[in-house]
Length: 136
Image (cartoon, rainbow, N blue to C red):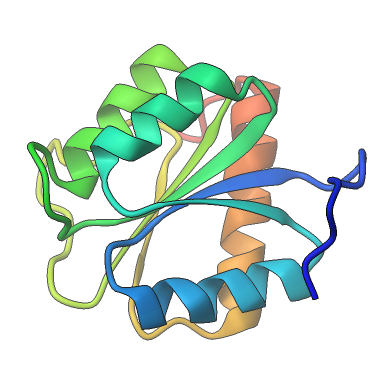
């Protein structure tokens, strides 16, 4: 059962995944971990959500998606436009190459254990909110 209203203390995660079954599984994992989940099936839809929802704490995006840009480019644009939002990129097919990942973002290979997914999201949110680069 989906609650009608968001509980104020729940961090809001924007999940960008085009595969419905994968998205459903990730939504279940994130809700079980007490995140509020907003879904988008591609980067274009996700940008509209980001523009209208200032409460987004983190973006969880797949790499291979339909549309004009992939998850790596989307992650870089999120970091530029919304530096306070944590960014986690995931893929079962493609790993990041040089320059693919924005600063302070994280990457995980699918399949991902639920605890690892939650831990990585928590870490990217803390890093983004702190505004501190882990590289420095």
